[in-house]
Image (cartoon, rainbow, N blue to C red; front, top):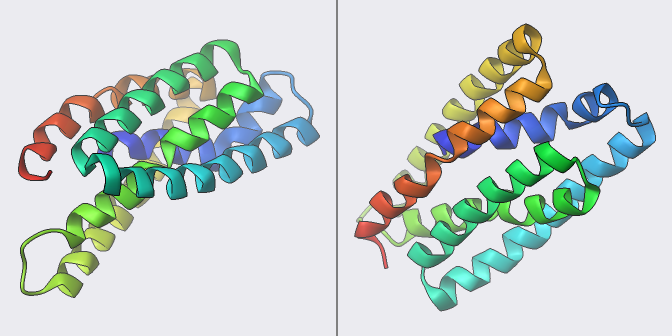
Length: 166
């Protein structure tokens, strides 16, 4: 959550500002955000089902690598098609992690779910603030690059976390 939260918050909250700063029109920027969110929904449904078939471990690793690579391509090329692919991978980890929490061998699954949601909300809140500060201080292009570099950490973390899940 921590490593990908920077990418998610920078893209979902600051994408129109980033694209207008890159010289795109406000219409293009708004459509890009809608496209990212639409393909995020597609990725959520797709990877949720894929994790049931191919295992949480493989799907989480695949989505982590895909989101990091597609974010790199988006920062470099700024293409709307790459943004659609990024949306698929970026939001895919949500249902996988939620299903992983539900699969834990616990006598209090509701409490485990609420703990996961609280941690997710807390981490996201702090990261949104940090992304805003970085964006103001260094610019959104540099902030996107920093968030992408930090997101590389989700790949080894996925390998580490998945030792305990199938």
